[in-house]
Image 1 (spheres, rainbow, N blue to C red):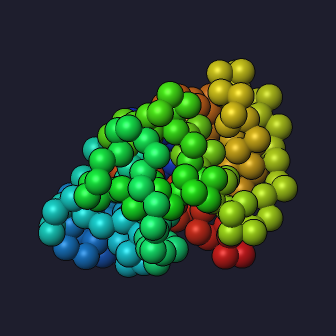
Image 2 (tube, rainbow, N blue to C red):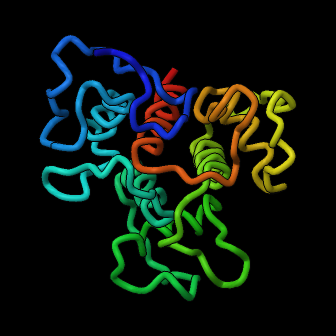
Length: 212
């Protein structure tokens, strides 16, 4: 069936059915047993896996409903940059040497893409929120020299006032570019977490928006 929805947690605007659903609902993407063509996130997972943007949590699992952490998102952007060498050490007390995200966080901080919480902590294992993801992608796009001038008025969302001050411009941009859409027609849920399937969808839309 090509119906949208399913395990998306009511995230209506993020539940487009996959583009190609002719192969039946049991066909998996690549080798991920937990991603089937009937899932709303199938095409996004296929996209990020093919491009090497996101990898599975194991050889045959993607973990679509698992939380995406701040360390994961920064590592993904670092991968997009082909992992440039970093010489400096981490400036955050909670980013330890030899953690998978260490070099990524150092690179992102050195380039103004992440700033941490302002108390010497970065929170690499904290679940990323939708507004944090918008802010990090916005700063990454700026770092890349992409046009980030598009802005949507978010007044249609009743919870737009809940967006943290630092993330307002980023959310206006991400919404204008179709990267982060409403969870419902009237809510954008800035502090909501992005599970891995949602992160894949946001990253796919980001890549497609900046490529055009």
